[in-house]
Length: 181
Length: 181
Image 1 (tube, chains in turn yellow, purple):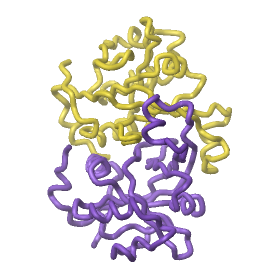
Image 2 (cartoon, helix red, strand yellow):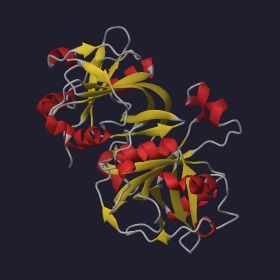
Image 3 (cartoon, rainbow over the protein chains, first blue to last red):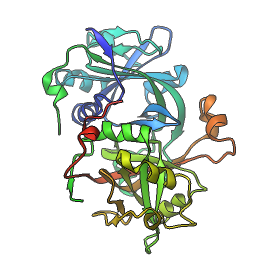
Image 4 (cartoon, rainbow over the protein chains, first blue to last red):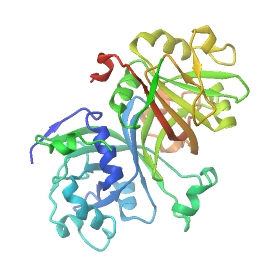
């Protein structure tokens, strides 16, 4: 699919709608040919240190954690509604055990600025380089959060990625462009 | 000005455009009648722990830091272009020394869900309650950041606020609604 460069703010509402509805795809690599995809339902976008940023949360137990620690970059990919099952697969299988691109017949396309690939079948993409990371502080969470999300104490690391490039497909489904929750 | 409730995603592009252009206004209170406003050029929005969130950065030296630590809430207010001088004043004067609402003839209106007031003259507003906080880790910053932003080691605290309500003026300037950088 042909992709064009966009302002990172252009499809933000749609990106958040997709994140809440099906989840996004976080792609990473070991830089030696092994790529991975993780489903992500959480993330924040904006400006920090004068840079446009996409901050993602990854648990230390995840394969993606290892990969981002190694290469310090990632891409965020916004799927169409039709990729719901792909997102679900990526969220329930570890990349340590299988190549999710291959299993789900997805095409990994090279980023312009980062080592991590983009998922060609998605509609919108953000290429990000890590400029900071820090961790969830257990004692500083609102009371309802630990029991619901951290029963085993596997607290997330926040990876703060500078958005180096954002892209969208030349043609986007009208239902995606006009989507409002 | 009459305000109506909106989805937090509705004016995100415009919020980020305003953040990059003039800055936003971060309002807080001690809960006992003393309110403050800080100019903010950085912030991120999205979903974490299933909640819509606005994460803001505040240095420990700021008066706003004390206030948010005390009440654990804040509002983010998006100014029109006409408020550029107000933002500039709020970014260069400490609330310890003056009441910025009074000095700048701004109207503090009560939030529905938080103690911190909203700045009536702004166009879009987000009411937020702190659900987490953590700090910039000096050793994990990209090489260009410390010299540029932390020559005195005054590292920011990240306050992660759940967006409880978002509002916009009933009438918005067309130039605001259509704004794209």
